[in-house]
Length: 392
Image (cartoon, rainbow, N blue to C red; front, side, top):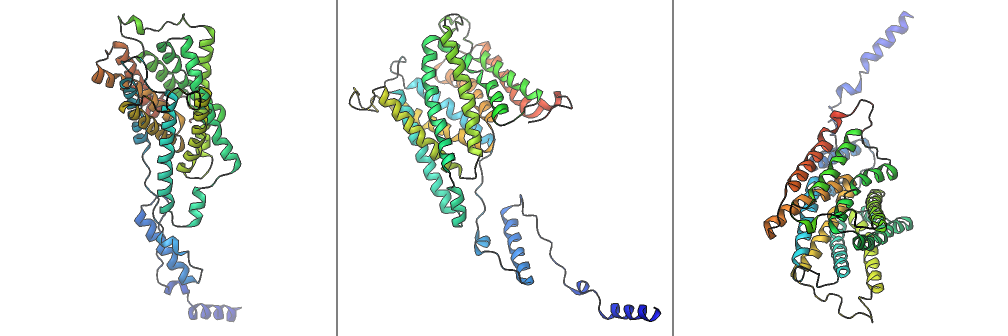
């Protein structure tokens, strides 16, 4: 056994560990979340290691692939949605003939907005496809199934039904009452997200949504002395309130449903938008035919009465739709709800500056409550939750 031990010792001396003489290997970089330059260096190191070990090299496209395009920050998209919403509201007021009625067909304006959105989405999609390095990436960007196409048809039809329900509601209740009741969609969006997406909000975030609803309702109360604009909750019939509740829950459900559709596959957001807007155009054309505003029964042309401000409304509403799609894909329907709700006080301030519309204490108070709700939801809601509350 002593001779066997010496033989082993001599063999270890004669054959030292080959790794001790090998040149030090460069540690691979962490590619996930790295900057584009670090990702390119990581790809080069991977190729060198494969060549030195005899492994098959990576595809050439991996060396020349472009970094993914920078995505617009969520808060910027929310600010765009709020700004375009204010622009659309002011332009709609300015487009009225004598400040009383619209000189153009409202559904034609909606159709023009849908056309603007699909043209913009098609341009963005073409730009994205040209920037993709491989046919595999392009096929992924254009991925679809019959089920996904059918899913895209649901919001297009549902939003057309929603527009008609809004007209029914306004027939039975006055406009201020309609606006205040419409703020219930804030809480309804939270309920729809919990039912459809299993998104459970903590107690603090439910309180924040309640504050947002309260602030939005208060900000729409007419200034003192303006009796004509004060809501009359007892003048509407039961069918008006039932229609308003249908509008609230349909709007909230479709917002969450569209969010689920946008996040449900890996296709390009611009390709998803094209599918949505195709069905939106079809639904609007059908509405125009049924109303007799196009075709043999039409008394005027489709875009009769359009003026400069009507064109601004078209572009602003179309831009709002694109911003909503971005928020639903990369954020959630709650972020979209906050951006839409905060456009109410922004519109009041812009209307005061542009048209001299008076601001009351309710507007200022409601705006303050809504800003507190925004901060509370995204920063301070967890401070008031119990340890057992589940976060969203």
